[in-house]
Image (tube, one colour):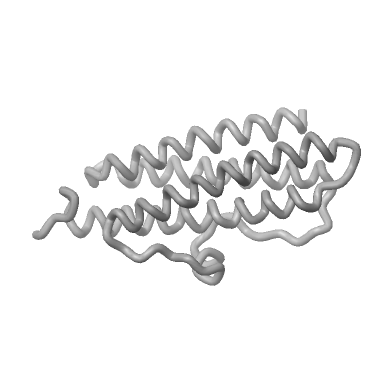
Length: 155
């Protein structure tokens, strides 16, 4: 069986499936965070506007890293909202949202990402794609930190 970057076709296929879902979910949570950044209102506007701004910028970098990993594995990266909505575990939302509801929604979304990432890392345990696992572990840590920050605002 031919290998690409030391991985067999089955390993790459599993990694692509996982990465495509993670990319889609990350993109939807990115859009939601940017939406909230633009539309937050209330007495905590400045603080939340800045917080959401930092978070969506971090997610934008993550999207690029995940998409590049898919390309690195020799595949076409999903790149349409149709594909993202089909693959994502995170669902879009419609405004209006109160600032508190925004925090709750994002906290729940990041928790879903944490679960999805843990399951994905476990799925990749035996396929030898340490590069993808490393990227997913990095994303897991980022979502855990973001979830903690959002939950702290709700406490």
